[in-house]
Image (cartoon, rainbow, N blue to C red; front, side, top):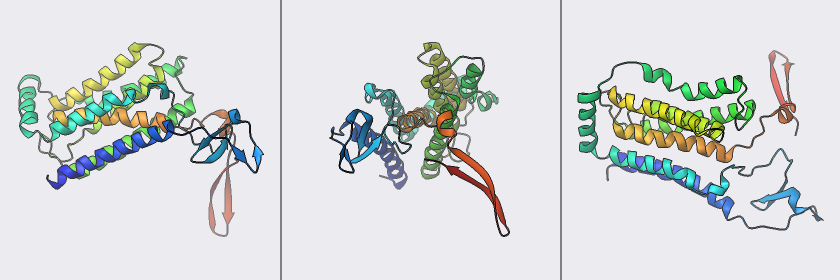
Length: 277
């Protein structure tokens, strides 16, 4: 197997490994009687992780507060299928080239709409909130989740782009996976998580916008079909992983514990940020 092929499969294996380790380590955690400094503690007020006791109100709480925990692995089926299919197509040179030729012959596109509507889902989330339609989380947690989703998605996508070193249909570099598609699907899934329970149409609109971006990237001859399919899965997975691990501390109660003040030591001046635990 070529080294490039091994590298791509390696990074995908790492992504799946991190995901499933986090899920199964929580699911298989046995119940334990909690003792702290030789005192019996009311079990309902504490949880145990890796043999360490934490109070529910502790700022150090590091449990997976995943709202969809009862759904098990169902949220990961779609991204796993998309990533696997995109990876398979990536190595099916004839199939993706034939598909690209068919798209260019029938649906060639040369505009810039895809560069702008990729931001539509995240703009829609904050617009809905500005008009008083409350989503799943408050402003602080919602913003923290959006930022972390973007950063995680960007890290995965750029790492794969560098390691795969795939040439685009138009001859440019860094083709696999599609950054535009991955980002917009990450934000579409973000909108789905925030507003999907209010109405399925929010999710339909978000995913339709993301799919349109992927179609335009292929029609624009900027990406292969494999790039957008894998990118869609990576985007959804990135946001799902952030919701899995987010600690929901960006609210007024915790933000009050922050203090920012200037300091001066000799010729050195700056700002100090202190968090009171």
